[in-house]
Image (cartoon, rainbow, N blue to C red; front, side, top):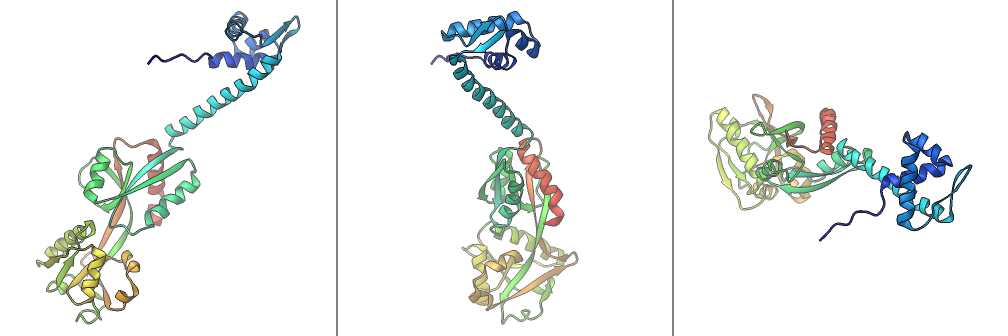
Length: 308
């Protein structure tokens, strides 16, 4: 299919606007910094194509005809719209406008990320966000393939392709039946928990908790006994409440437990030589390929990281 060239040129519209404002072709040429002959010729060719006179020429200058008044009214809209289009598009290049795709790891409590990012979009109304949930491995691949702009996930991350900024950390606590011998202690080391059966959920959070458990127990000189359950990590807590073993969970998730479950469990802080065990969370992005709008958000996150 052939592409037709627009019948009007923005330069011609500008000439009409300036001639009307200056009141003469000579004055328009002076204001535009061009030659009078060029402005006059452009106007003449435009009027020939339109088949109507836009100006009435007199010895004292040029005045719009009724057709010229109607033409200029629409020309003004096009010219102003072009300026607006230019400025709006320039805001994309400066990172002031854009839709940012954010991937969120499933182990992050609901609402926390949107609360952080939506506060930014309130201050920057040209920025909006879309969200998707994925496992950590899938988010890493999505960043690499540029399917998302930012990912919020547990740290650290492997490789040098992705840059990160830490945001906050959640303590990892041990959850057990209220009748468990350690239940009343309040805090326990990994060594003191080594003879328990650890219940692991079948989800991304479960994989992260299992990795942390294995690392901490090896550091303490033990190999933990684990049992993977065919349920998500939050549901594993109900099994722990029944006395089936010990569950691990980021403490931010405790608020999502039903009251009936909270009444039957004990929450024990787990400590080691480095202090309390925790999950570290942060924002990640492609180090080399990151849109300008996302970079403005990253700068905001870097500035606010200590507040999170």
